[in-house]
Length: 231
Ligand code: SF4
Image (cartoon, rainbow, N blue to C red; front, side, top):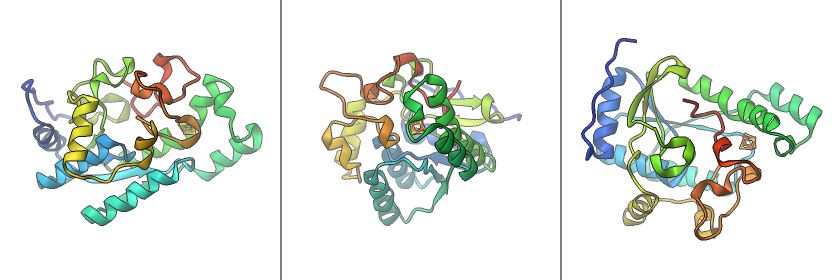
């Protein structure tokens, strides 16, 4: 691919990052939406800026009901079309029959297998028709995201453009934005959850704990990625 990754001034707004990334992609761009506060903020920012941004979501089969409620609220508010992707049923059936329903708690290898089947493989299908994708990742979220860039080439997914418009936002800035604009939020956020993924792999965190401490809480912090954002 011959597109150039644009340089970014330090104070570039999320809308400007999105616009520059969409232009650089030179083709269809979609938000990988997990219905986090970040993703909801991005949908609102893109909508207000009149940007041509698609939205896709991966239904792993293990999501919280509260997450589906946010999806429905967004559909209604923005008249969105969400492209849903599911895991291949043969793979899910094989793992559940051979290893049971909670094999991901037994070893890192099993956890990666489950994430690969339920998230990574559907993601690769979702990205196929795209020239760019958008994520809600922020630099301060975890030790695994410190060297993130606002717009980068995603070499592990065919060299398409990856756009992280909220890269510099803090958790409180995101929180402030969604409340200020009265956006639909996952009810679990009011119950101590600060980063929400699949139901059996997410729990509420204690005050003062890292936001992602509730994801795969039985693992070390440097392992807390699902493979969607390999770099
Ligand atoms: S987060 Fe948990 S349930 Fe979801 S795909 Fe990964 S291991 Fe499986």
